Image (tube, rainbow, N blue to C red):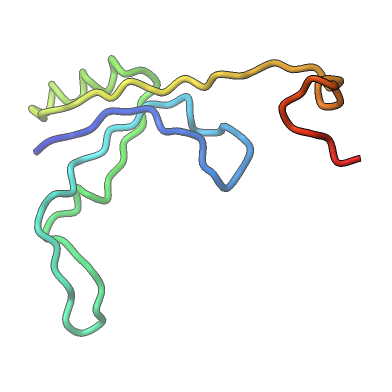
Length: 101
């Protein structure tokens, strides 16, 4: 069974960055899915695709995967880049976007 170790990105629904400092280990969900005939829900024969384990460091996640004999792939996190600007730059004459004033 293959696992993916990554640090999740900020959700698009909220402005906060809660939960983005932890590392996660998720199992591969490439197993065959089926449609349950009575209710029409999609299901799998294993529950591993529903698990998401949290770790404080990537080394701890790698140690867990090697201890349990899992193949793993570590994804590097995408660091966010901030462009610092002053409030007065919104009203500069040489700005690329004209002000609507």
